[in-house]
View 1 (cartoon, rainbow, N blue to C red):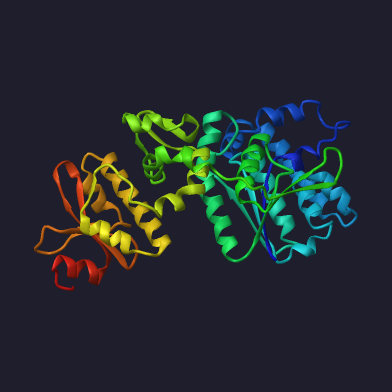
View 2: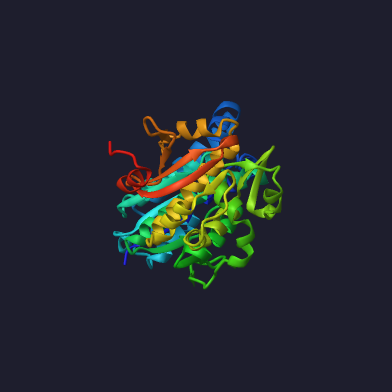
Length: 385
C-alpha cells in the first residue's frame, strides 16, 4: 500500500552544519533570533545572516551529496531525513511508490532547508513536493494560528484525496518547529494512520498507530450554523449566537470572526454527519415546503452535504454584504441570476443541480425548489432554455 508521508520541516539541516570549533560563537544565536524572518527581510536587512545561511546551505549539500557520507551521517545531519530513513529502515528505495509532502514555514531558513531536502529526496524518490503556507511562522501566536488556519484545509484535502486512492497516511514529526509539531500531532490523531518520532539522542524510530479519537458531536451541535458559515468566510462578531462559539474555535479580526485551526479541525470531523441531516436554520434563508420536500427526496448523502455547504455560503454572503443579493450575483461559483420575464431567481449548487428562490425584503431569500435544471424549471413552470 503506498504512503502519503507528511514531514514538518525545521532548520536542523542548517544548524547541524555549524562547527563549534571553527565558526563564530554567535552563529547559533543569530540564526535563532532570525528564525522567523522571511526571505525578503533577511535579504533586505540582514545580509550577514543571509551569508551565514548560504554558507550552511553549501555545507549541507556537500555533506548530503558526498559519496563518502553514509546513511547514519545523513540521518545525523537532518531531523527530517532521520525520520524518513527510519521509516524505510535506511533503504530509501522502499518509498519509490510513496508521495512525500514537506511542510515548511514562510521563513528564510525553513524555505532553504525545505529546498535542500526536496532536491536531495528526488534522487531516491519520485513524488516530492513542498508546501509553504504564506505568512506561516512562529513569530507570534496570532501569526501562527492564522497561518495554520489557512494551511489545515489544504492538508485535509490532500489527505482525503490520497485516502480515496487507498494511501496510508504517515506523519513524520521528527523535524520542524515545536509549535508546528504540536499542531500536526493533533491533526495526526484524526487523520494519520501512524505518526513517527525518533528517540532523543538515537536513530530508533517510534511509530504511534492511529488512535480512536472522535469529536464529541454534542459539543458542536449548538454552534453548527455559525461553524458552517465560518467555513465559507468571516461572519460578524456582533450576533449573540456568534459570541457563544468557544473562543479557541475562532479567529477574531476586528468586527469579524472565522474558524481557527482548531475550529476547522473540529468542524471537519463532524460536518458531513450534521449537514446530511435536517436543513440548518441559516440567517437570511427561508425554506418553502416544496424546497424541504426536494431536500428530503435527495437520498445521496454527499449531495445533501454539498447543498448545505452551498446554503452556508449564500447565508454568509447575504450576512456579510450590505447588498447581499448583489454579492450573490458577483460570485462566479453560485451563478445567481433571474429567469427571463419572471420574478424567480436561481443559483447553482453543483454543475447539474440548482436552487430556485425569490428575493424578499432586506435581502432575504425564500428557497422554492432544488434539483436538476429540468426539475426546478418544470416545477416553476418555466420553459426549458
